[in-house]
Amino acid sequence: MDTVQIQTDSKSYDVYIGEGALDRILPFLKKHFPRLTKLLIITDETVAALHLETLQEALQGSKSSVFIAPSGEKAKTFDMFYQALTTALENRLDRYSAILSFGGGAVGDLSGFVASSFMRGIPFIQIPTTILAHDSAVGGKVAINHPLGKNMIGAFYQPEAVFYDLKLIKTLPQAEIRSGFAEVIKHALIRDPDFYQSLVNDIQNLGSLSTEQLRKALVRGVEIKREFVSRDERETGVRAYLNFGHTLGHAIEAEMGYGNSTHGEAVMIGMIFALSLSRELFDLTFDLQQFRKWVRSLGYETNIPPHLLDDRLVQRMKQDKKAIGESIHFVLLERPGSPILQTISDELVLEQLKRFKLQKED
Image (cartoon, rainbow, N blue to C red; front, side):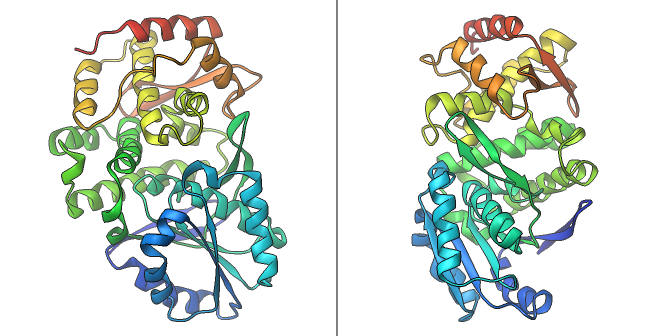
Protein backbone atom coordinates (compact mmCIF):
# COMPACT_ATOMS: atom_id res chain seq x y z
CA MET A 1 0.00 0.00 0.00
CA ASP A 2 1.37 3.39 -1.01
CA THR A 3 0.47 6.50 0.97
CA VAL A 4 0.80 10.00 -0.47
CA GLN A 5 0.21 12.88 1.93
CA ILE A 6 -1.54 15.95 0.56
CA GLN A 7 -0.85 19.23 2.35
CA THR A 8 -2.91 22.32 1.58
CA ASP A 9 -3.54 25.55 3.45
CA SER A 10 -6.93 24.27 4.63
CA LYS A 11 -6.25 20.59 5.31
CA SER A 12 -3.76 17.74 5.32
CA TYR A 13 -4.89 14.25 4.35
CA ASP A 14 -3.62 10.95 2.98
CA VAL A 15 -4.20 9.15 -0.30
CA TYR A 16 -3.99 5.36 0.08
CA ILE A 17 -3.25 3.51 -3.16
CA GLY A 18 -3.18 -0.27 -3.50
CA GLU A 19 -5.20 -3.43 -3.54
CA GLY A 20 -7.27 -3.78 -0.37
CA ALA A 21 -7.56 -0.05 0.36
CA LEU A 22 -11.29 -0.47 1.08
CA ASP A 23 -10.41 -2.43 4.22
CA ARG A 24 -8.80 0.68 5.70
CA ILE A 25 -11.92 2.84 5.55
CA LEU A 26 -13.73 1.53 8.64
CA PRO A 27 -10.67 1.72 10.94
CA PHE A 28 -10.07 5.25 9.62
CA LEU A 29 -13.63 6.29 10.42
CA LYS A 30 -13.47 4.83 13.92
CA LYS A 31 -10.18 6.57 14.65
CA HIS A 32 -10.90 10.01 13.17
CA PHE A 33 -14.67 10.28 13.71
CA PRO A 34 -15.49 8.65 17.06
CA ARG A 35 -18.81 10.57 17.21
CA LEU A 36 -19.85 9.59 13.68
CA THR A 37 -23.63 9.16 13.44
CA LYS A 38 -24.50 8.22 9.86
CA LEU A 39 -22.96 7.71 6.46
CA LEU A 40 -24.35 8.61 3.05
CA ILE A 41 -22.79 6.71 0.16
CA ILE A 42 -23.09 8.62 -3.11
CA THR A 43 -22.40 6.48 -6.15
CA ASP A 44 -23.68 5.92 -9.68
CA GLU A 45 -25.64 3.19 -11.42
CA THR A 46 -22.63 1.46 -12.94
CA VAL A 47 -20.50 1.42 -9.79
CA ALA A 48 -23.45 0.43 -7.61
CA ALA A 49 -24.12 -2.64 -9.75
CA LEU A 50 -20.46 -3.68 -9.74
CA HIS A 51 -19.06 -2.71 -6.35
CA LEU A 52 -21.61 -1.31 -3.86
CA GLU A 53 -22.02 -4.61 -2.05
CA THR A 54 -18.22 -4.87 -1.69
CA LEU A 55 -18.04 -1.43 -0.07
CA GLN A 56 -20.95 -2.18 2.27
CA GLU A 57 -19.23 -5.40 3.35
CA ALA A 58 -16.05 -3.41 4.10
CA LEU A 59 -18.14 -1.05 6.26
CA GLN A 60 -19.34 -4.06 8.30
CA GLY A 61 -22.88 -2.92 8.93
CA SER A 62 -22.15 0.72 9.64
CA LYS A 63 -25.34 2.75 9.48
CA SER A 64 -25.41 4.05 5.95
CA SER A 65 -27.87 5.16 3.29
CA VAL A 66 -27.23 5.26 -0.45
CA PHE A 67 -27.90 7.78 -3.21
CA ILE A 68 -27.44 6.42 -6.74
CA ALA A 69 -26.94 8.95 -9.53
CA PRO A 70 -26.84 8.31 -13.28
CA SER A 71 -23.45 7.34 -14.63
CA GLY A 72 -21.08 9.88 -16.13
CA GLU A 73 -21.63 13.62 -16.47
CA LYS A 74 -25.39 13.15 -16.01
CA ALA A 75 -24.59 12.90 -12.30
CA LYS A 76 -23.42 16.51 -12.25
CA THR A 77 -26.71 18.36 -12.70
CA PHE A 78 -28.73 20.69 -10.48
CA ASP A 79 -31.39 18.01 -10.26
CA MET A 80 -28.98 15.33 -9.00
CA PHE A 81 -27.47 17.82 -6.54
CA TYR A 82 -30.95 18.59 -5.18
CA GLN A 83 -31.93 14.92 -5.01
CA ALA A 84 -28.75 13.98 -3.15
CA LEU A 85 -29.37 16.73 -0.59
CA THR A 86 -32.96 15.51 -0.25
CA THR A 87 -31.68 12.00 0.47
CA ALA A 88 -29.36 13.39 3.15
CA LEU A 89 -32.24 15.25 4.79
CA GLU A 90 -34.68 12.33 4.55
CA ASN A 91 -32.13 10.07 6.24
CA ARG A 92 -31.54 12.67 8.97
CA LEU A 93 -27.85 13.20 8.47
CA ASP A 94 -26.41 15.74 10.88
CA ARG A 95 -23.16 17.59 11.52
CA TYR A 96 -21.58 14.37 12.81
CA SER A 97 -22.40 12.46 9.63
CA ALA A 98 -20.14 11.94 6.64
CA ILE A 99 -20.44 11.32 2.92
CA LEU A 100 -18.57 8.57 1.08
CA SER A 101 -17.99 9.37 -2.59
CA PHE A 102 -17.85 6.02 -4.38
CA GLY A 103 -17.20 6.28 -8.09
CA GLY A 104 -15.36 8.20 -10.76
CA GLY A 105 -14.70 11.89 -11.23
CA ALA A 106 -18.32 12.87 -11.82
CA VAL A 107 -19.51 11.19 -8.61
CA GLY A 108 -16.60 12.76 -6.72
CA ASP A 109 -17.51 16.22 -7.97
CA LEU A 110 -21.18 15.77 -7.05
CA SER A 111 -20.45 14.20 -3.65
CA GLY A 112 -17.95 16.84 -2.65
CA PHE A 113 -20.29 19.67 -3.60
CA VAL A 114 -23.12 18.06 -1.64
CA ALA A 115 -20.81 17.63 1.37
CA SER A 116 -19.59 21.22 1.12
CA SER A 117 -23.11 22.64 1.17
CA PHE A 118 -25.05 20.27 3.47
CA MET A 119 -25.32 22.01 6.86
CA ARG A 120 -22.59 24.34 5.54
CA GLY A 121 -20.15 21.48 5.28
CA ILE A 122 -19.76 17.94 6.60
CA PRO A 123 -16.80 15.56 6.09
CA PHE A 124 -16.48 13.46 2.99
CA ILE A 125 -14.14 10.73 1.82
CA GLN A 126 -13.16 9.98 -1.76
CA ILE A 127 -13.23 6.32 -2.84
CA PRO A 128 -12.27 6.46 -6.53
CA THR A 129 -13.18 3.63 -8.88
CA THR A 130 -11.61 4.98 -12.09
CA ILE A 131 -8.13 5.92 -13.30
CA LEU A 132 -9.39 9.41 -14.12
CA ALA A 133 -10.27 9.97 -10.47
CA HIS A 134 -6.62 9.78 -9.42
CA ASP A 135 -6.62 13.37 -10.61
CA SER A 136 -10.10 14.58 -9.66
CA ALA A 137 -10.22 12.94 -6.20
CA VAL A 138 -7.18 14.91 -5.03
CA GLY A 139 -7.14 18.66 -4.54
CA GLY A 140 -10.63 19.58 -3.40
CA LYS A 141 -12.26 20.84 -6.58
CA VAL A 142 -15.96 19.89 -6.44
CA ALA A 143 -18.65 21.07 -8.81
CA ILE A 144 -21.67 20.46 -10.99
CA ASN A 145 -22.18 21.45 -14.61
CA HIS A 146 -24.34 24.11 -16.20
CA PRO A 147 -25.52 23.87 -19.82
CA LEU A 148 -23.34 26.91 -20.54
CA GLY A 149 -20.18 25.51 -18.99
CA LYS A 150 -18.53 22.54 -17.30
CA ASN A 151 -17.81 22.72 -13.53
CA MET A 152 -19.09 26.30 -13.35
CA ILE A 153 -20.95 25.90 -10.04
CA GLY A 154 -18.83 24.48 -7.24
CA ALA A 155 -16.37 24.99 -4.42
CA PHE A 156 -12.93 24.12 -3.10
CA TYR A 157 -13.59 21.49 -0.43
CA GLN A 158 -10.94 18.97 0.57
CA PRO A 159 -11.76 15.36 1.47
CA GLU A 160 -10.75 13.78 4.76
CA ALA A 161 -8.91 11.01 2.93
CA VAL A 162 -8.76 9.16 -0.39
CA PHE A 163 -8.90 5.36 -0.53
CA TYR A 164 -7.87 4.11 -3.97
CA ASP A 165 -8.41 0.35 -4.18
CA LEU A 166 -6.82 -0.93 -7.38
CA LYS A 167 -9.01 -4.04 -7.34
CA LEU A 168 -11.91 -1.81 -8.41
CA ILE A 169 -10.08 -0.62 -11.53
CA LYS A 170 -10.15 -4.08 -13.12
CA THR A 171 -13.77 -3.73 -14.25
CA LEU A 172 -13.20 -0.50 -16.22
CA PRO A 173 -14.10 -0.47 -19.93
CA GLN A 174 -11.38 0.56 -22.38
CA ALA A 175 -12.85 4.02 -22.97
CA GLU A 176 -12.60 4.81 -19.25
CA ILE A 177 -9.05 3.46 -19.07
CA ARG A 178 -8.09 5.79 -21.93
CA SER A 179 -9.92 8.68 -20.29
CA GLY A 180 -8.03 8.29 -17.04
CA PHE A 181 -4.64 7.58 -18.55
CA ALA A 182 -4.79 10.85 -20.48
CA GLU A 183 -4.50 12.65 -17.14
CA VAL A 184 -1.46 10.51 -16.24
CA ILE A 185 0.17 11.62 -19.50
CA LYS A 186 -0.79 15.23 -18.72
CA HIS A 187 0.92 15.09 -15.34
CA ALA A 188 4.08 13.72 -16.95
CA LEU A 189 4.20 16.40 -19.66
CA ILE A 190 3.77 19.37 -17.32
CA ARG A 191 6.12 18.23 -14.56
CA ASP A 192 8.33 15.20 -15.20
CA PRO A 193 9.93 14.55 -18.63
CA ASP A 194 11.60 11.37 -17.34
CA PHE A 195 8.23 10.02 -16.21
CA TYR A 196 6.81 10.89 -19.63
CA GLN A 197 9.62 9.05 -21.40
CA SER A 198 9.11 6.00 -19.20
CA LEU A 199 5.43 5.95 -20.18
CA VAL A 200 6.33 6.10 -23.88
CA ASN A 201 8.88 3.32 -23.45
CA ASP A 202 6.84 1.01 -21.24
CA ILE A 203 3.16 1.51 -22.13
CA GLN A 204 2.21 0.23 -25.56
CA ASN A 205 -1.21 -1.26 -24.85
CA LEU A 206 -3.63 0.12 -22.28
CA GLY A 207 -5.60 -3.12 -22.41
CA SER A 208 -2.71 -5.05 -20.91
CA LEU A 209 -1.62 -2.67 -18.16
CA SER A 210 -0.30 -4.65 -15.21
CA THR A 211 -1.35 -3.75 -11.69
CA GLU A 212 2.23 -2.76 -10.96
CA GLN A 213 2.43 -0.46 -14.00
CA LEU A 214 -0.84 1.14 -13.01
CA ARG A 215 0.19 1.53 -9.38
CA LYS A 216 3.44 3.28 -10.29
CA ALA A 217 1.71 5.58 -12.78
CA LEU A 218 -1.05 6.53 -10.34
CA VAL A 219 1.30 7.15 -7.42
CA ARG A 220 3.50 9.42 -9.54
CA GLY A 221 0.45 11.19 -10.94
CA VAL A 222 -0.88 11.87 -7.43
CA GLU A 223 2.56 13.07 -6.32
CA ILE A 224 2.67 15.54 -9.20
CA LYS A 225 -0.87 16.72 -8.45
CA ARG A 226 0.23 17.24 -4.83
CA GLU A 227 3.12 19.49 -5.91
CA PHE A 228 0.76 21.96 -7.57
CA VAL A 229 -2.12 21.75 -5.07
CA SER A 230 0.09 22.19 -2.01
CA ARG A 231 1.50 25.42 -3.45
CA ASP A 232 -1.78 26.81 -4.77
CA GLU A 233 -4.93 25.31 -3.27
CA ARG A 234 -7.41 27.72 -4.89
CA GLU A 235 -5.84 28.00 -8.33
CA THR A 236 -4.63 31.58 -8.15
CA GLY A 237 -1.27 30.63 -9.68
CA VAL A 238 0.60 27.44 -10.55
CA ARG A 239 -2.34 25.09 -10.01
CA ALA A 240 -3.73 26.41 -13.29
CA TYR A 241 -1.00 24.43 -15.04
CA LEU A 242 -3.00 21.29 -14.26
CA ASN A 243 -5.47 22.54 -16.89
CA PHE A 244 -3.06 21.60 -19.69
CA GLY A 245 -5.25 20.35 -22.53
CA HIS A 246 -8.47 21.33 -20.78
CA THR A 247 -9.23 24.62 -22.53
CA LEU A 248 -10.02 22.98 -25.85
CA GLY A 249 -10.88 19.67 -24.16
CA HIS A 250 -13.77 21.17 -22.19
CA ALA A 251 -15.00 22.97 -25.31
CA ILE A 252 -15.05 19.67 -27.22
CA GLU A 253 -16.92 17.96 -24.38
CA ALA A 254 -19.53 20.71 -24.28
CA GLU A 255 -20.03 20.82 -28.05
CA MET A 256 -20.22 17.03 -28.30
CA GLY A 257 -22.78 16.99 -25.47
CA TYR A 258 -21.68 15.80 -22.03
CA GLY A 259 -21.34 12.04 -22.03
CA ASN A 260 -20.73 11.70 -25.78
CA SER A 261 -16.98 12.04 -25.34
CA THR A 262 -15.05 10.98 -22.27
CA HIS A 263 -13.25 13.74 -20.41
CA GLY A 264 -9.77 12.31 -20.91
CA GLU A 265 -10.21 11.60 -24.60
CA ALA A 266 -11.32 15.20 -25.21
CA VAL A 267 -8.42 16.47 -23.09
CA MET A 268 -6.00 14.38 -25.16
CA ILE A 269 -7.04 16.28 -28.29
CA GLY A 270 -6.70 19.48 -26.26
CA MET A 271 -3.17 18.53 -25.23
CA ILE A 272 -2.14 17.83 -28.80
CA PHE A 273 -3.51 21.23 -29.82
CA ALA A 274 -1.69 22.91 -26.91
CA LEU A 275 1.55 21.18 -27.91
CA SER A 276 1.06 22.42 -31.47
CA LEU A 277 0.48 25.95 -30.17
CA SER A 278 3.58 25.65 -27.97
CA ARG A 279 5.71 24.76 -30.95
CA GLU A 280 4.28 27.73 -32.85
CA LEU A 281 4.65 30.32 -30.08
CA PHE A 282 7.62 29.10 -28.02
CA ASP A 283 9.57 26.93 -30.46
CA LEU A 284 8.91 23.95 -28.20
CA THR A 285 11.28 21.14 -29.04
CA PHE A 286 8.98 18.15 -29.00
CA ASP A 287 8.31 15.35 -31.49
CA LEU A 288 4.58 15.92 -31.88
CA GLN A 289 4.33 13.49 -34.78
CA GLN A 290 5.78 10.70 -32.63
CA PHE A 291 3.48 11.66 -29.76
CA ARG A 292 0.39 11.48 -31.97
CA LYS A 293 1.51 8.11 -33.31
CA TRP A 294 2.01 6.78 -29.77
CA VAL A 295 -1.32 7.92 -28.38
CA ARG A 296 -3.15 6.67 -31.50
CA SER A 297 -1.59 3.26 -30.82
CA LEU A 298 -3.15 3.48 -27.35
CA GLY A 299 -6.58 4.04 -28.91
CA TYR A 300 -6.94 7.83 -28.72
CA GLU A 301 -8.44 10.04 -31.37
CA THR A 302 -6.04 12.86 -32.15
CA ASN A 303 -8.19 15.10 -34.34
CA ILE A 304 -11.00 17.49 -33.45
CA PRO A 305 -14.30 15.82 -34.48
CA PRO A 306 -14.92 17.24 -37.98
CA HIS A 307 -18.52 18.29 -37.32
CA LEU A 308 -17.50 20.71 -34.55
CA LEU A 309 -17.36 24.31 -35.75
CA ASP A 310 -14.36 26.47 -34.95
CA ASP A 311 -16.47 29.50 -34.01
CA ARG A 312 -18.51 27.42 -31.56
CA LEU A 313 -15.38 25.99 -29.96
CA VAL A 314 -13.97 29.50 -29.48
CA GLN A 315 -17.19 30.64 -27.84
CA ARG A 316 -17.10 27.64 -25.51
CA MET A 317 -13.50 28.44 -24.57
CA LYS A 318 -14.47 32.04 -23.77
CA GLN A 319 -17.18 30.71 -21.40
CA ASP A 320 -14.81 28.32 -19.63
CA LYS A 321 -14.17 29.03 -15.96
CA LYS A 322 -10.46 29.48 -16.77
CA ALA A 323 -11.27 32.43 -19.06
CA ILE A 324 -10.66 35.89 -17.61
CA GLY A 325 -12.68 38.78 -19.00
CA GLU A 326 -13.66 36.50 -21.89
CA SER A 327 -10.00 36.17 -22.87
CA ILE A 328 -8.94 32.64 -23.73
CA HIS A 329 -6.10 31.25 -21.64
CA PHE A 330 -4.08 28.20 -22.63
CA VAL A 331 -1.56 26.26 -20.61
CA LEU A 332 1.36 25.76 -22.98
CA LEU A 333 4.84 24.27 -22.64
CA GLU A 334 8.08 26.20 -23.05
CA ARG A 335 9.68 22.78 -22.80
CA PRO A 336 8.49 19.45 -21.36
CA GLY A 337 8.06 19.93 -17.62
CA SER A 338 7.89 23.74 -17.86
CA PRO A 339 4.32 24.98 -18.36
CA ILE A 340 3.27 28.58 -18.87
CA LEU A 341 -0.14 30.27 -18.90
CA GLN A 342 -0.70 32.29 -22.07
CA THR A 343 -3.52 34.54 -23.23
CA ILE A 344 -4.39 33.83 -26.87
CA SER A 345 -6.51 36.12 -29.03
CA ASP A 346 -9.69 34.81 -30.63
CA GLU A 347 -8.18 35.44 -34.05
CA LEU A 348 -5.06 33.41 -33.32
CA VAL A 349 -7.09 30.55 -31.83
CA LEU A 350 -9.28 30.43 -34.95
CA GLU A 351 -6.23 30.50 -37.20
CA GLN A 352 -4.53 27.71 -35.25
CA LEU A 353 -7.70 25.59 -35.18
CA LYS A 354 -7.85 25.76 -38.98
CA ARG A 355 -4.16 24.85 -39.29
CA PHE A 356 -4.50 22.06 -36.72
CA LYS A 357 -7.31 20.45 -38.70
CA LEU A 358 -5.10 20.44 -41.80
CA GLN A 359 -2.11 18.79 -40.11
CA LYS A 360 -1.31 15.33 -41.43
CA GLU A 361 -1.34 12.43 -39.02
CA ASP A 362 1.78 10.76 -40.34
